[in-house]
Image (cartoon, rainbow, N blue to C red; front, side, top):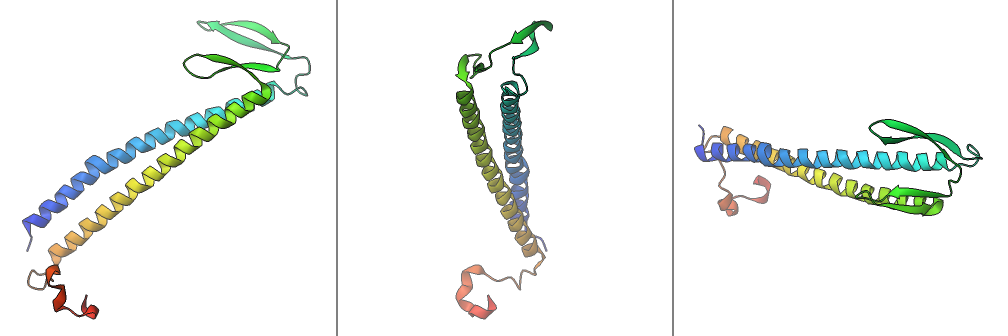
Length: 165
């Protein structure tokens, strides 16, 4: 025998899981992917700075090609790698020494790692909410399978001994 109230509650819970919680989880995972991509880019950029400024590999500087626009390249020779121009956001460039550039990159990587950790915690909480809702749905479905005459009234807890609960 089915109870329409319980079936309606199960339906509402399932809709909440699918429409709200799973959508929130999808958004958090997309943000986490973007942040992990940014961390990867920053680590690669830090490695590139290390390679470019290594005096053992390039004792007299190095030659490179620079895109001057519309995929037109110009050859450039870099003799002094003691300072770097780095984009710090909004196309604003600052001149850094090697040590400052490494510290700046470390701080940015740490900031993004902290954001990623916060998003991972948020995703774990959402997954826990989904699991709790699914457990609740399972209990409600079990409630539907029990004969109504044998159901325990939770308000009558005093009728049962602790072993019967």
